[in-house]
Each structure stands twice: as C-alpha cells, then as structure tokens.
Image (tube, rainbow, N blue to C red; front, side):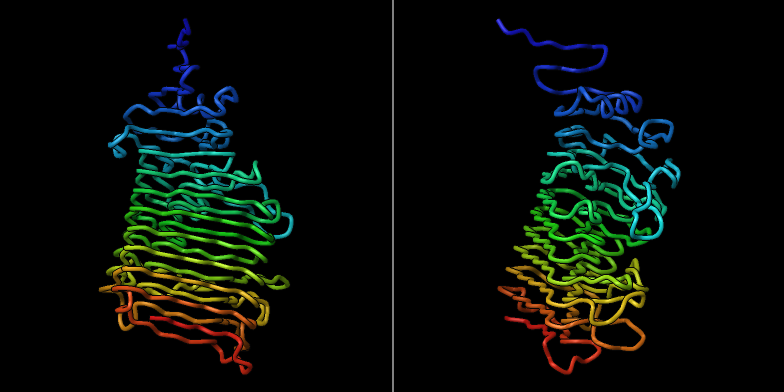
Length: 392
C-alpha cells in the first residue's frame, strides 16, 4: 500500500508536490528552499506584504519548475504586495556594456516552467521596479511561462515577458497569458503587458498566446518591441482580449534603437488578434513621451524607430506584421484608430531611421471599420524602401 506523506510542520505534501503556506514567512521559506524545486506553492487567503529583510532583497524568485497558486475562483483573496519594498530591492548588478544598474520586478520567473495562478500581485510606484511580474530569470535556454486568473496592478509594467541583454541571446520564451486583469499600471512606462527582446542581444525569441485578458486603465495596454537587438522575434496571438480605456491600447514596434554605436536590424514582430476589442483608448492616462514616445489612441504600429540618443540609419530590415479578424475598434482618440509608420526617426538631423522596414496590416471582418493613418517614413526616405500597407 502506497502511503501519502505529509509534514504539517512545513506544509509539504511530497506525493502531490504541493506546499501550503498561510503567512509571508512561510511563503519566503517555501520559495527559497531548493528542495521545493518542481513544487506548487499554494497560498491561503490573506495579504502577503513583502519585506526586504528576506532573501533576494524581498523579491519572490521562483525556483526551477515552481509555481504559485492562490484560491481558485478568488484571485482577490490572495494578495502578494510588493509596495512596501524599497526601490533598492529591484536593483541588480550593472551590465558591463550599458550604464546604470539592471532593474527587475516583484516576482521573477523564467526558471524552466513557472506559473502564477489565482493571485493578486501589487507592484511598486517607483521606476526602480521595472515590473510587477518579470521573466528575466535567465537560467534555462527555453522557458515556459503561464500567468492565469491573476490581477496585476500598481507597477511600471504589469507583466513583462523579457529576454534581457547579451546573456539571453538565443533564449526562447513560450508564454501563456489567460483570463487576467491588468490595470492601474501607470508608473514610468505604464504598460499592462510588455514583450521585450532588449539591449545588445541576438536571436531572442518570444512566442505568446493571450486569451480572455482585460487590459484597462494603464498608460499602454500592451507593448511589444525589439530594443537595441538584432535577429530577434516576438510572435503574439490574441483571442478575445479587451484593450480598453488605456492611454494607448496597443504599441507594436518591429525595432527600436536608443543608444549610439548600436544597431537594431533584422527583427520581426507579429500580432494576430481574433475577436479582441480595442476600445476607448483616449490618451488618459497619458502614454510615455520622450525618447520612447508612444502615440495615444487605439494602436501605434512602427516598423523601426530611433531615438534622439541614437543615430539614423541604424535600424534596417525590420518587419511588423499585424492581422485582425473580427476585432472591434471604437471610441479611440480621434481621428485614427491606427497610427502606422514604416520607419520613424526622432534624431535632430531628421535623417531616416534606416531602410527596408516594412509594416503590413490586415483588417478582416468588422476590423475593416478601423480608421488608419499611414506614413511610410518620417522623415521621407528617398529610395522608398520603408513601407506601410493596410489590406482590407
């Protein structure tokens, strides 16, 4: 006869692979115990206020194949609150190439297969906290991320699916994001969901499946971009998601270069949506301006962009592909639901950002009603290799 082993002292059920916790001290003990790799940490109802006196400066960092789960059907009953952590809790050692320190999030994932379900996670109102939930634990070359039935609020980026810097070159992130609410992320970037191959890296791959998420009340609902990276790709599929009442609903960039002496070439972003809504995105709260400006309204789509800190002609051969099937655009900031550019330069000399940057947008079903502003290149590129096309 097989006997189920359970230890009431530490809440570990060795047969089921579950660890039950009911207070913040038990939570920290569970997530930092190497013996709990591969286990599911189950949180009892309550508020878990994070404390910098615990390991990792109070951040929650998931071990290999570890998951956190609250109470099914009651995400509001289990709250992981990072708002009391100091800004220093989110700072990591500096990157050798780029100035300043690295910044991370309240909960860090990316170690094999990690999942969060049925939780409320609160971030911190400081830009030192890069995100509420972060996938930058670069410990495996392929990582599977699942975030489902969660409420994510109070940060700079609610959920950041990110390959970061040279050490993440070639890394693959497979993400499932389902039935969450992303709201009230208004610090700094102010993104509900972010997808990000970032800085001095090559061949990073992000593939994400979204379904049934409600993304509202953020500066930007969703942003996807390859930043100071080369030969990287981001592929997103959206099913019945709601991008509503944000400053900007969607911000999609094939490539963005923000540093001198670097390039952002040969990148790819695709976004396909089925029955999703892009409604009432009216520029409130205002999306970011400055070097990483995002246009307010329904959707911004740019093949390649350089900032005032970079140089022109450093973003080339990038492609952005967008397809909508039966998606509703309505009530967004006038006059256009979609603001699209093949390439955009904010460099003072007003030279083109690069060449051969292409944006293709397909509007099918009721999506054909979306209004669009199309600019192949700003400033004008004489050869005409930067293009933007809409197919209805």
